[in-house]
Amino acid sequence: MYIDHENLFCEDQEMSGSAYSTNYIDMGQANTGRGEPIEVWVQVTDTCSGVASASIACHLMHSSASGSGYASLVEVGPVLVASLVEGYRFEGLRVPSTHYQYLKLYFEVVEAFTVGTVSGGLVKNVQTNGYDFIAEVAP
Image (cartoon, rainbow, N blue to C red; front, side):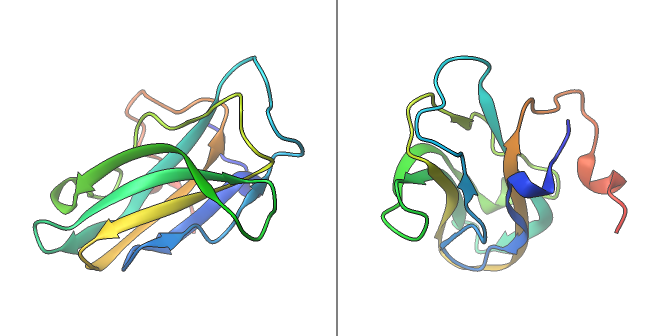
């Protein structure tokens, strides 16, 4: 799986409360159309901790303007804090063929976390062979 820095929504973003990703991605135009799907990769990079009922839902958002008006396009979760260990991936997020030009992520946190970070971005294919991306990235 190749990760392009220009296609990252966030890198090691803290999950202490609900928040948009630190970056948005300009797709160049709305509605990329048919073809190979564009995967959204979102992975926990530092184990989350908090009360047992704490959870995160991950939303892919879209807008026709880069600064405002984002609406939910696709959602995954919520996932309870016990599952949010380093390396956990939010599965099933893909960019639909019909969308606005600008994309970003929204992390909906229920009950505050004391620690935990995530990284996410657009990738051509999500790696599924068990390779631990986080352990192999050089600082």
